[in-house]
Length: 613
Image (cartoon, rainbow, N blue to C red; front, side, top):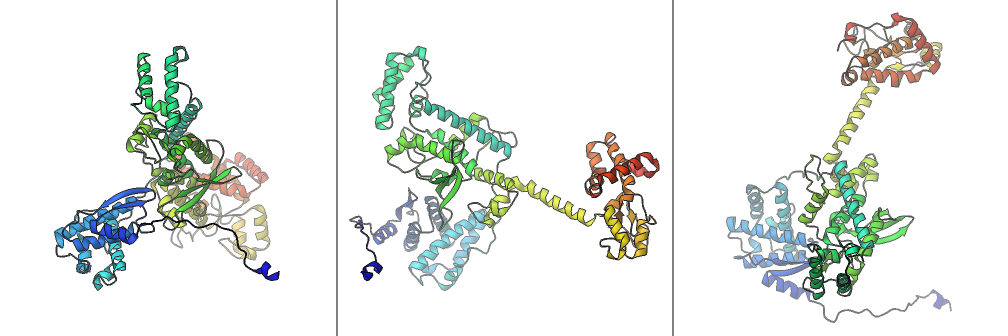
């Protein structure tokens, strides 16, 4: 019995089923190499790679075609069909170089380090942008690396060593993609929300005949409209040549109703249209910061783990090699939240998804059929911004770049987090957050203001006078040897400082002939209120009447000077007195000093430069 309890537990299972015939990868590779033409399918999309233009070097072309075929397989360096196409274009560019500069290179064993460096120099001489040159260079070298891995020793030793680096020619730092300003972001968000409200109303009144008043409703027209909707419900779409649609079209024309958007009006009551996807995508990107390509590839089961008014959006970021599947926790609720917006889209696209049998989020009607793929064309983007009259920062019609929406969200989040990179870095590393999302022109004024504030604080700390409250003054008078921070030391010097023997107008001076603003032994050359920014100055309650008299004079100057001139001349000293010196004394001391200042007009001495503009 003990053995039965402690032994391994067998659980019932089921047989693993595999297809009867799996394609042979070796046979596919051989076919691709022989024909120099093959189909690449990555991330649910397909493209045909055609390398038949690589003529004249059949052996080299077949070797590199095999390397490209391996790069385009699942798990290879291509990763997407756009990258696969970029590999093919880089290889064709390398072929053009061989045709013009190295016609003797016909096999992989003929490729030398000099040939590779010559390709790099040839691209540079042709005027190609340095970064584009590096991209093409890296893809060609990747193909050589794959070819060498498949056939070790096929490359000469110098060429094999040359594959260890991309180029010895520098690139240039890419100009970071900027975020949109707050006004543009608000206009985009308002336009998208207005379209969302229209969509909600459209689906809520799905059974109402568009552009037809109840008073003009005829029995034939109503029956024809219901027939067209029944066809859509049954077949998913109704075509222009369908008899039901033709009859409805004719009846509407006879009743004087417009037909220019009839096909869209009919399908828009059951499905999302292509034009509907753009505002939803803009709103989702602005609210979540998801990449546009990730939004396009969202699936119908992307919402995970709803709890406490939040939900996780599961998405795929293809650029994150090895960590493509990611999740982002967002608010969930009404359609004003990201989670609620996706739930609305799921509700609206359910008929199209069931008809297509696809597990995609953005199933919609476009070009006379139901489509599972989201295609935001340039024309759709331009027409949407033009319809809403959205302007850019210069007041011109906005040319919307969808890839800048993530930067716009990130810039707003950066301002909310106060530039704290640990909180700002969501979905990427701190280094990427700093280099790609924080270091952008839209946030430059924040960084410059931060540097200016830091320098001002450092200057204030370095040039701040010593301000002593009455209690601190009494303690130092009792025990001068314990004084810390005073510009003088010793009982005699401290007594002279506090008894007024070294007074200047606004402070007691610890060294009138040892000024930090001039040579030692010379009289202090500072302006008459420079004492307030001097390390030799000691300010006690005895100087409060003079300070209050000067403060009253400063404030009276607002009436005779412009605001900009007053700030330039008196702003700093006013802040020093009002914000840094007076708070060190009690209200009773300030009130008593104010009475003295009001009764003794001889307290204030202003040289001619005080009133000069």
